[in-house]
Image (cartoon, rainbow, N blue to C red; front, side, top):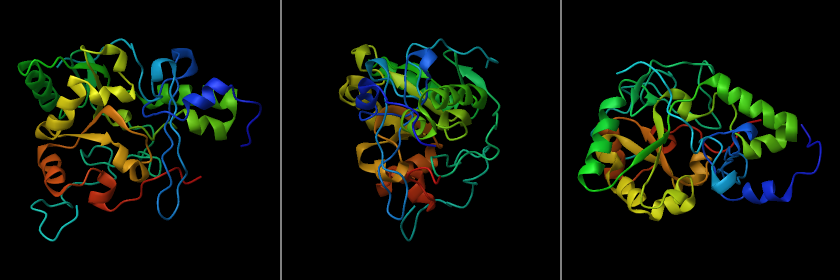
Length: 273
C-alpha cells in the first residue's frame, strides 16, 4: 500500500537506527526492524526506534506481566533434525520476517520468571542465567518477554492506520512474526547504565558484555548481531536473547554460527510481500 502522507522527519531518522521487538504509538515507542537485503531476495532494512531508541518489539518500562507461577559441518555432534523448526511448540522453531508462526495466533503455555512470562522450558535456564550474572556482580534486569498476537496486531494496525502498510513495515513488526510471541525470547537490561537499555550502547555495558560471553552457557543466543543482520532481517539487538536449549546453543558457539537460519538452512531476510 502506498504511503498516505509525509512521514515526520524524526520518525524517518529513528527508523535508521535499530529495531527489534514491538511497541506501538500509544506506548510511545516504535520499532519493527526491517533487515538488510539477503542474497536471493528480501527487503532492505532500516530499523526503527522510539523515544530513547526503543525498538518496536520491546516495550521499555513495561510492567511485568501477571501469569501462573511458577549447522554446518560434517560432524555436528548434535542431531539437527531432532526437533521441528516449524512447530511453534518446538524450542527450535524459526520465526522471522520470512516465516511467521503457524498458526500465527499461537499461544504457548507460560510461567513467570521475575514477573515476566516465558515458556516453562525456558524458566530454569533463564533463572540460572540471572543467578549466574548476580554471582558475578552483574545485575541483569528483565525488560520484556512474552507478548501475544492480539497485542502485536493492535500495535501494527495502529501504525498502518497512521502511515500506510509500506511505512508501517519500516517501524513495526507484523503480528505473528515476533520471537516474543513464542515465549522463548526475552529482552534484558542493566543497572550500571540504564539509559542504554534498548539502545545500541547496551552491548558495551558490563551487562551487555557479560551476556555476549555467557548466554550460550545457559541455552540462549544473542539473536541479532551486527554480523548476521542480512540473514536474520533485523538490526543488532544486544539485549534480545532467544532460548534454544544448552545443546544447540553450545553447538552454535563451537562452530561459530550465530543464526538459526544458517544452522537449519531456512530462509531469512525481509518480508516476502
